[in-house]
Length: 129
Picture 1 (cartoon, rainbow, N blue to C red):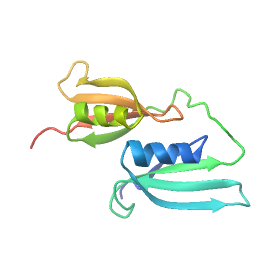
Picture 2 (cartoon, helix red, strand yellow):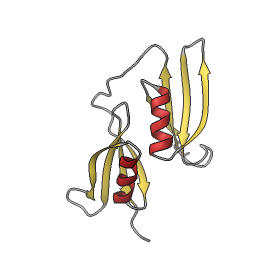
Picture 3 (cartoon, helix red, strand yellow):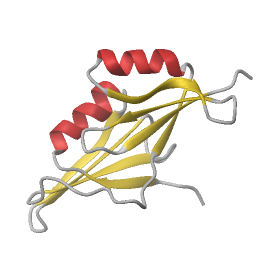
Picture 4 (cartoon, helix red, strand yellow):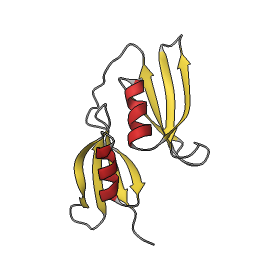
């Protein structure tokens, strides 16, 4: 078994696709409209879902926003350099909510960014091998 994807509901599919592809550098893997159900599913990721986990963006046509609630934490992405990743994200119009630096009570360098719907994305700097 392996994780295939994580689904999040988005208020504007185009705005979210721009963020995940242009700001975070993912690719649009697939997109399909379901007119009878009035929703669209778009999958984004760095590799095909057959190789690596993806993010499923669910856009319900009649709903403009969602409350994230207190049960959801964040998505996490591995990066080579969290400081440079934050600079790139800001340069592309993304919102950094916690600048890169060592995590509290540890040494791993992390940062947090926020997507257009308010979902948190943690950037975790890979340790040199």
